[in-house]
Length: 408
Image 1 (cartoon, rainbow, N blue to C red):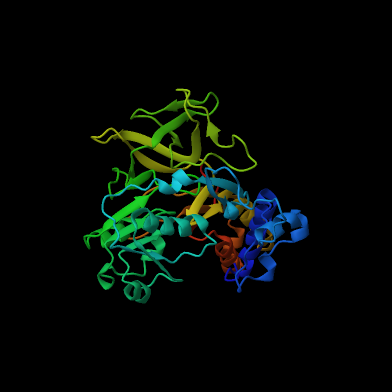
Image 2: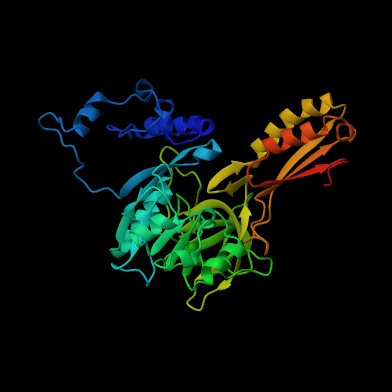
């Protein structure tokens, strides 16, 4: 957290306060480089001194530090910090144990480079190694020198982190797992042409290994994912009267259940869970939109990822709330337009259609449309207005300035 930019530290402070509020831990370990700004106030968390004493080993006679019964819970992870709505996810042992691939073994070396601030990614890298008895190489960066030094054979990371690497420069690598954001056609072709196994995973803190893509894409260029064995996939086709469908041809919100899916959020009983029509365990609603396009020869569903069902888009592994960005841009641009003898009509930011990116590179994550009268465009303040608009633009978004009414 000490390495976070100044504007992101209030987000991390809020996340840490939520951890103390919801979990009430008895012991908190802090790294030596943690900035004081992100450390929450202990008195607000109502942490029990007795629990703290137990955690430190000063247990009074007759007290047990560990639970007498085994717990299905492996750990808790906080998610949604970048969206302003943090939730505490219950991660169970079976989620970590559900790893399926035939090609990894003890001879492999998995690079663990992600900071624990991104808990799901960090633990995912650890889990890949633990699942197959491979060597875990802990480091603090993902670059050619680090990969070569550790002779890493397996990388797990967001696609944007692979942009600066050349597959031929890291010959020890034979398998790459990506997650967190879409992989462009250009980047995927570069890594797959080196005869590497590249698996694009559709995962989150709430659901682990369940859907993967090996490069198959639809006519529109969207990734086609396959479900692993044990993953039950369905789509919610109606929100007013919930209807779950699991047959090819249906589109809707992706819903999942299985050993790799969380049992829910701590303190939010039933949140994002949908009763199953077969009377079995409930399905988890992911907020992702998909189309069921067919089945594999062994019966597992194939699906096309079509984007989010809300106004969140992911850029460099972090969610950006487009509705919040809209409001922020409109509030700042309206007085700027008035000062230029113009008038701001509307600001609309839309997520880009889900795809693996155009042939020329990575597609914008979103498109921002600013509709204004032409007054400020003819004034001496035009360049200042445009500069302000660009500075407020979410990272990875394209800016479109319209001089007429916004098309509907």
